[in-house]
Each structure stands twice: as C-alpha cells, then as structure tokens.
Image (cartoon, rainbow, N blue to C red):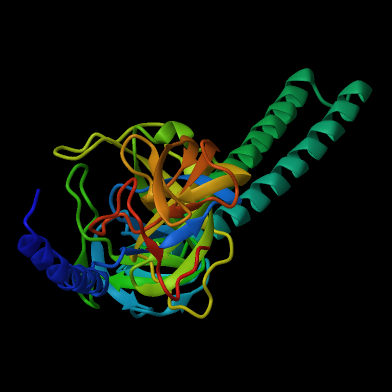
Length: 389
C-alpha cells in the first residue's frame, strides 16, 4: 500500500502528465506528414488501336524520279534547262553534238528522193514494155510476127517490171536509212519522260558526257523529279511485317514539319526482307498521303516516321498504359485508400490498354506511380486541380 505522501505526489503530477500528452498529440497532429497527393484517372470506354512503327527513319520519295544520261557519249552543245526549272513531258533537256548524224539523215532523205524518181522511171518503162508485149501477142495471133519476136517482147516486159520492183525496194531501203539516222539523233537528245522539276545537272555546256558503263555508276546528266506525287518509304521490323496489309490507315509525322500529323494509307508492302549488315532485318513499306500537304513545303528526301494501325477495338474499357504495374496490376483509389488489383488486358499500345477484367467503368486508378509512398494500403489524396478524368 502506498504511503499517503507518495499518493499525494502522483495526484499532483497527473494534470501535468495529461497536459504533456495533449501537447504531444497537438504537435504530432500539426507536424505529421500529409498523405501523398496522387493523380487519378477514371476507367472509361473508348477506342484502342494496335500500331506498328518504323525501326529507322523513313524517307519522303517521289512517285516518279529519273536519273538520266545519254545512251552514247558526246559533247554537250545545247543545255536547255537549269536547276529548279519545271519541265513538261517530251521537252528537250540536253543535246549532244550530232552534225554527222544530221548529215547522214539529210543524205538518206536525198537518196529517198532519187530512189523515188528512179522507181517512177522504171515503172513507166515496165508499163510501156507490157503494152508492147500485149500488141505483139495480138500480132502473133494474126501471123504478122513470129513466136520468137513475141517471146522477146514478153521477156522485155518482165525485165522492165522487175526493174520497177527493184526501184521500189530502193525506196524502202532509203526509208530505213532515214529511220536509222533519226534513231541515232534520238540517242543524242535527252527528253523529259514526265512533267517534273530538274533537281540536278552534272554536265556543263561544252563538256563531254559519258554514259555509265555496266557496273560502274556515274553521276546522271540530269536528275528529274515529279514532286506532284510523294510518298513515305519506311523500314518495318520483320517481326511486325505480318500484321501490315495494303490499305491500312497510318499516321505520318515529319521532323521538318513540327506539330503536325498527316493521314496516310499503306500503298505497298515489299515481298522480301532486306538483309543489311549490322542492322535488323526489315521490310520496306510504302505509305501514301491521303491528303498531300499543300501549305507546307514538302520536299523529296525529308525524313519521316509512320505509325500504321493494323487492329482497332472500339468502345472498350481502357486505361492509360503508364498506369499498369508489373504483373498487370493497378492501384485503385477507394475511400482515400489505395487498393491493389490484378486486371486482364486485351489490345494495347503505348498510350492506351484495353481492360477485359478486374475493373469496371468509373473506377479511379492511380496515374502517378513514381511518387514515394504510393503503394497498396497507403492513404492518399487526389491532386488539387487535377480531378479524376
């Protein structure tokens, strides 16, 4: 049993102890760490797409591009275009020295005229000989000339007709020589195979143009580009190539045109795989612009990226892909406490993931997973100014 003095001391200290406990509670309340503020997002329905992107930068290419050189060598005597000039199909761009071929063409033309005159003369003689043979036949029937005389007239008519036919053959030969001369002249002239713009010229007036020998590439005399039709050629990893088909929609972005995305459509998927040393095996895919850029200065050679959509699931439950934890887990916000939940997923991309089980529409999940203290069982507060979306 305590002594009366000791009991009186405890009785006197009790209010002080209660005050100290109250003060400690107040200090703890005002100095305690606040629950972390987290960004929440609501589970909603929407579109989820599966996409494929190029492994390396693609390139803007022209539908028509011709790097032209004369099929034969010669000195450039007429250079009729300049770099950056627009030309029409069939327009003469460059002409090599061809005076010798022009002289051959003129000679062949004269020979054709001569052959025509000779044919006219030979055929007139053949007609006269045939008429004389006909009269000799009539006279032979009446006994005025012998059979020998008739034979001479008939032979002379046949010889004259053969001369007429030979003269016509000379006309055909002369025409062939003219065609050969014109073909030679065509080889000395470069013409535009299509409407376009002259991108580059490697020769100068007076220089000697040389054709490219087999297996030895040489710069083309004229590089012509049809910039009215442009498309994107992009390499796609071989593991994704099976999902790509002609006609699929795509999104095109260009480094040179920031902040804009252009709608595209797959035009062609190469039927073979490129095997480049020290690079992953890829398949070339060509993507057309659905609506070609008009206000932007789109140039052949620009680098471009494509995102091809090969599968879509509309009106499905979806969440941001960044809200998924390893093992297909999410943190669900419920009454201020975080609850861990395992979900089943379907189609996914870098932005959205389809949810096939584990969540219902309207559930709120944590988006900011990299904050300290954000884990299952933790008490949290939604970020101020960023309500659940």
